[in-house]
Image (tube, rainbow, N blue to C red; front, side, top):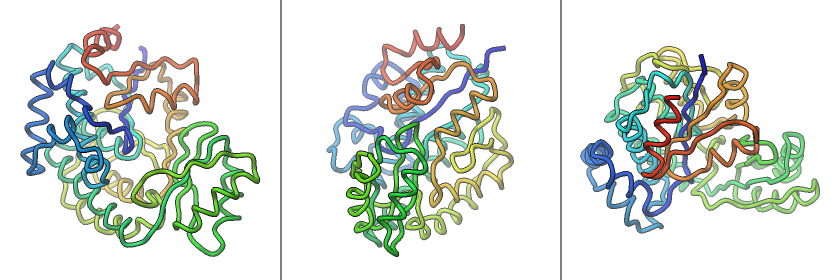
Length: 313
């Protein structure tokens, strides 16, 4: 039997207008946006469709917006004829891991929206409390990234935060250390791109967010996933409710091992991937991880029916 994985994007996939054509085409998507707005207490559809961009880019807004949009596209995809039982594996980049857990039946939509909303608020608060940032190192491997961090830290916090794909590692730390990293990257032959984010996500700067999130997760109901859902922090599959809570809490302060996650699913026999959510971020990363790998992107209304047919074949 062919093993197929569905993967969901994380923060940074947002854009004004995301999900609008799906909303117009699918009654099920409209239901999801309505439920999300009810939980959040504001019109999440209007914010996704109309912006403004500066509000949509705030961590505390961006996270529930991407989550609700990804779920709306997923549910519209199923409504178009895709068989959820065909997806043996699921995963997501950072925030996208929550969407994967929802899709695998590990948490209800309403509870997931609440958790994601609080996660965004806690991460935003942690970022505001301590000036910090992130820098993408293009052309870097693990050794080069480590060298940049060692040279630029100078007693401050700076370390790897995202191992996205070959040649792309994101580091995170204090503002001044990140500034020094841009210079240090030139010395190892890398191109450094400072990222427009609120703070140093997936780093020790998020310790207060992790503490707050542990309380939130303790109050949420989780069940063992119906599919294999891979964890960003260790590229292992999630287990029972307690292990899910523990791993999601660690995810906030530890590096995202996305390249390893994809590698683990490939090693487990996955031969087809479907990206569900706004944009094509994970499709782009897959091309760099394994250019020959089959991946279908479902982010627009016109891809719903054809994608569902492909996933069913």
